Length: 79
Image (spheres, rainbow, N blue to C red):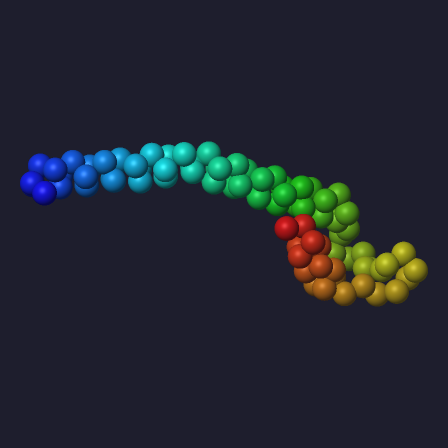
């Protein structure tokens, strides 16, 4: 194989790798948008249910609620 042929093979391979990476970018971007959308929805959900810190945290039956545990559960199920 001549030097020119080797250079051609390398150039073709690099071009193919660059093309594959370029084709993958829209998929990765959609994944990032979906993750941002889920995060935004979670924040909106938490904001609508937010209560002032001075208000007691209860489950509707006047039982104390472990807020950290509840937030962790929401986070786990949101993603």
